[in-house]
Length: 179
Image (cartoon, rainbow, N blue to C red; front, side, top):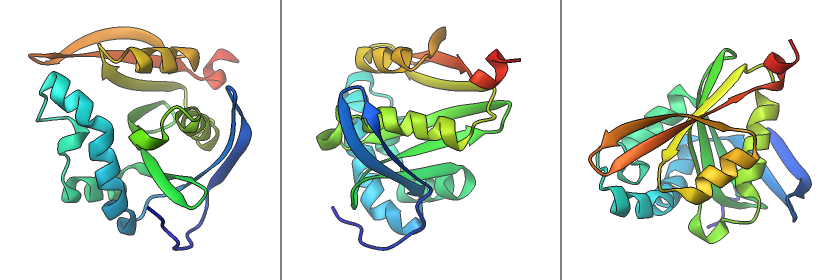
């Protein structure tokens, strides 16, 4: 899917991303992005929906209206590979604590460094955040490895639904470590 509309670009990462040397563009998500992002979001979380049967909180069940509300209310960024929209990031909070609510990359564009670039983008965009937090499903071993390699530590387990346990991960920022 192409999005040829010119919008302000907040950051472009062009660095070595663990063996992948790719450029990704991050820009503030607009309402016009919803028609492209919602199917990507649903595809990205469909496997978890089938595995955990969590129809209340799984992003694969999110409506157009809920995504629009999140874009308006929180820090929401669209991820592009060149001119192609491949996913988005949704973060919430302030400099004391920033919660990574969602990172989703199209299943066709995963494993190419976009997730790593997204986390690095957030850390550069919000350099004064003291604590980063996130939740990920207990059987999402690839996610565990991914977040741990980026410095996150598992701190808690939460039973969210009969088949779903979430692991809470936290990362203290360099701001706090240098004090």
